[in-house]
Length: 503
Image (cartoon, rainbow, N blue to C red):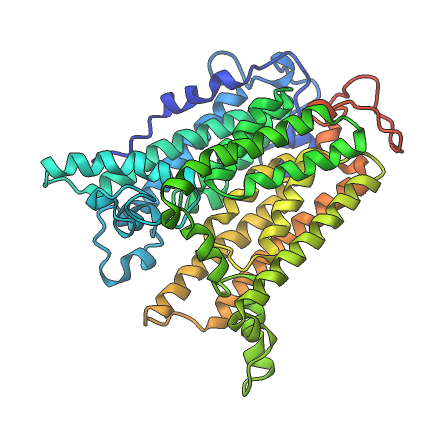
């Protein structure tokens, strides 16, 4: 493929039908977000009180360019730049550690060969796959036709074709996810620009197949918000069958059902989600048990991985007791104990989040709880790959759309991304910097996620600070919970949706 395949006009229309610019009051970050307001001073300050705004501010001017279409176009631009950033690796000629020195490594290209797709091997049937079933099926659905084409045309670079097709499909899913975010935030369309302009998205979008699960999860949340529990269950179940984490969204739904006593839709979504996961997995597990269980075997036997809390602790072990193995090194050598500890800490964190949801002065929003659960999983996990930042990205935007803390977190993620490639070079025999630099970057990334968790918890405990509730009366993602009576609410909901804050 000699071109990027990113067509801006086509990208804009991928998600354009997911939202509609209603004549409703629309949040303007230059007025409501202190960080953006400060930046706006360099170009004349916030939009004036008497500025003419079409459709309640939903349009930036006449004609084609609504806020929604601008955000979709920004997403297309980010994806195009990402493709350029990964282009040095597309031919697969990774000589002299080019994939690390150019920061362009991608599992998508590497695993085309490692998983035997270049030989026509069917995932799970002919070769065990280290990913959940839907991701393996996605790899096969795109990879096997490329192999079939390449057999008759030996002059084409199969790996490059495979990567570019994946980039196109994953990019379309990403654009659709932005459209779903816009649909969830009709009164706050600029929030979706945080996803579209994310620096972490720019460098990690196609490192792996995580955008597949992200698209399914965001559309699942949109289905829940639109009071479609069956569709929500199917989409979240499919998301779990692609990457495990969308399953965690079901926990906050159950906790909020407990607080509101609205069980019917919640249980429908949970049961349908579980049934979907089983329906996808059971046929493969029965037909190809050895290939199917590879994902579970790998996760149960992996030691401490790079960049995790446990990796940081193991590094500190060498500083505190250089002559003997410390506790974190012992955990890395005793994987069963490490597994138990990571699951136990995650379970305790989930119980704490559930307690927060039940005893908060006002019922928390679904996105806030979902963000905390997924963040807790990553914080305590023994594996935290560079692209896992994408798991948190849509949830962070829905949970707390404030640009200041968001950009701090994004900076820490990009610093980690750069340091990670330096560490890979070091492991390959080309030392770039001491290991302590990488550990510092991993610590900053952890601090960035913890800082976001702090602000989300603070907004739950002090709901008057919640930026989304400055625009919506309750929870636009809440589905059946939105507007539900809350006897413990010490912050009664207004009779009508408020106008966004102007200061």
